[in-house]
Image (cartoon, rainbow, N blue to C red; front, side):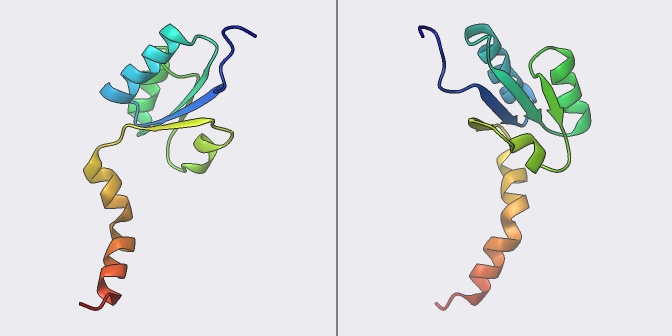
Amino acid sequence: MPGAHLISRVTILGTGLIGGSFALALRKYATDLHISGWDRPEVVREAQTRGAVNEAFSGDLAPALQNSDLIYIALPIAATIGNRAPRFSSRARHRRL
C-alpha cells in the first residue's frame, strides 16, 4: 500500500508552540493520522480550535496515551523534571557516597 504509515495514532504531550507546530506539520505531511494532544485545558483547547489535534486531553495522562503509536514530548524541561523530582530525590537519599 503506497503512502501507508506504520504510525496511525500520535499523542503530543505539550501542545504549545513546539508541540502545536509539530502537530500542524504532521497534518500537512501525513493527513491520515489521528493526533491527540495533552496539556493544560486552555492550551490544548486552543490547539484543537486551530485544528492541530483531533482529541484534547488534560489532567490524567493515561487516557491520552492509550493506543498511541508515537508519543512526542514537547513539555518544558523544568515541568517534566519537576514531576519526577520526588523519585530522584528518594533514590539520592538512599545512595551511599
